[in-house]
Amino acid sequence: MSKSSKLEKKEKSLKKEKKEKKLKKDKKEKKDKSKKESSSKSQKRSFDDAATNKESSSAPGVNKKARTAPLDIQDAYNAPTGVLPVVGAPATALPKLKKNLLAYTSSFLSKTDAAAATSASQPSIADVLAMREPHDIAVEMPGESESNATPDSSAPSPSPPPTVTFEQAAALLAPPYLKSSVATFEKPSAIQAQAWPLAFRGYDMVGIAKTGSGKTLAFALPAIAHVVSCRAREESGEVPKPASPLKFLALAPTRELCTQIAGVVDGVAQAAGVHSIAVFGGVPKYPQIEALTKDKLCCCCIATPGRVEDICFNDVRIPLLAGVSFLVLDEADRMLDLGFEPSMRRIISQIRADRQTLMFSATWPPEVEKLAHEFLGQPVTVRIGKGGRELTANHAVTQKVHVIEERDKERMLTQILREELGDRGKKGHAKAIIFALYKKEAVRLEQFLQRGGYNCASVHGDKSQRERFDAVESFKNNQVRILVATDVASRGLDIPDVELVINNTFPLTTEDYVHRIGRTGRAGKTGRSITLFGSVDKPRAGELINVLREAKQDVPEELLKFGTTVKKKESKLYGAHFKDIDMTKKATKITFD
Image (cartoon, rainbow, N blue to C red; front, side, top):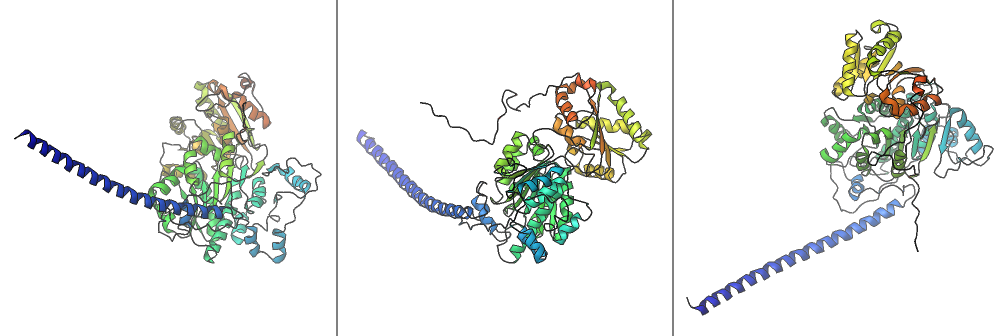
């Protein structure tokens, strides 16, 4: 082949390749242009949706400080049951909540009582303070108006007075299903007396009270009244029905506490004609999913954060939390300790922004305070006693501490049980909970007691949920008189007639000690606690001494020898080199020349 023919052939090949490249380029440009136009239309539609949401969030009664719900959740509120919302579709403004439930409960009252219940007149600050003082109730409104008031102030009180008797609470508890729930009680507890007037009026609230103070009923009654009110508005056609009937969600840190809250809520819910469900791990989740998605009366859910997050984000295609408008965070400090904060944030981000939120805790550390300011919009803070950063124990519990070597603990435990329960637990009818620090320690203690002839059961993380249920039930029903437990049972578990709590090993924090001994001395009764304190627990001696002194308990000389220094709380990441600061204050801007 000649040189010229080779060049011609090469030139033709290059031309052909160039033409193919140009065709590909044109085709790609055409595709990109089409995609860009489509994206532009979608973006314009999203801007329109955002404008619609902005208008709806500025409506009266909407919590502006709270996080705005995502667009698909907003759409889901008006979506028919079982139909998934289209992300990016035009959003419809959420129907406004009627947060003040007094208007609803007034329909059950006579005209005279209704007028009294919804009257705008408020007693003076001095009168309200006088009503709160005997019950050791302190209320901090967002503006802190009352905290700076003088006792003789005649100005109207910015917050409602406590309902310290059921006669005073009659206007709030007028519906039959609420009245029947408190029929067996003589009077409201301190937290109930102040929480009910606030919660029924739609306030976001933080409740800080000791264990066994009746916090569950403090939020359960307003929650069920809220659910009934919302359902009545939906049935009348005043607002559209959401994709899920769920209206009330309560988050709790442990399965046992979740079960206990569900038992209280279920009694009120059944009387009101709605259903409730406990959602937690360790049991099959598909029956829970069935109830949440198919039961049209299932309006109340009491859950642990991990399981409800799993169901909502991995198992169910309809937005279950879209219609939730009453949220409760119980034992918030414990949920943070257990690492549930990411799950809580993810769950709460899916709940409508104008919800009513109540948070309850026995302690008030800075991290819980910071969380409250994020999740609640200008909450009212209710403190019972010295609830707050100062650690206090239940004064109805007589505390005794034995400083003892590790090798002598079994001998001392046997001696205590023989004195309190008799040989092999045959003396009287007293019941005792023995707390261990670790699961293996709980197993060892149970076996040691059974070898000694004591009939006992145990609750810890290595037991299945069925075994944990059975152990707690057998203890409640007096089939066994000794329950060995780890700290899974230290929070919120309400077992009647527990006379004695024994700390075989001191917990890792003094807060957990306060919660442990709070399993006795509940509901107005007295109780006793005995703690075996070893040399390895020396770093927490100072805090324990402070708790004993505050409760006016005897402090043993052996404990004082460890010193009264209180070790600073340490950051899990950065140790103890930081200083105490108010996390709620805004940063100060400094300009340098």
